[in-house]
Length: 94
Image (tube, rainbow, N blue to C red):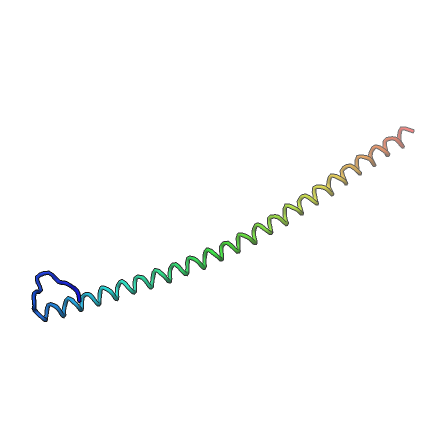
């Protein structure tokens, strides 16, 4: 039963107060349900973004490794090219 100041013993006022109390609690319950649904939605979005972030980190690591391998190959080929140029110069000098 909801207390309504000034209602006294008037049954009509008590009924109105109880009706208002029930409507208030329904609104509170609906608001709570909406907040729970929003929280669930945000949690799912967070988990999805975490998975996507992990995939991006993995792809980034793969690209870094590929760049290092290509850089190593480039350095080896550059050194081989310098050696070949030196041999050609020595052949020309002789």
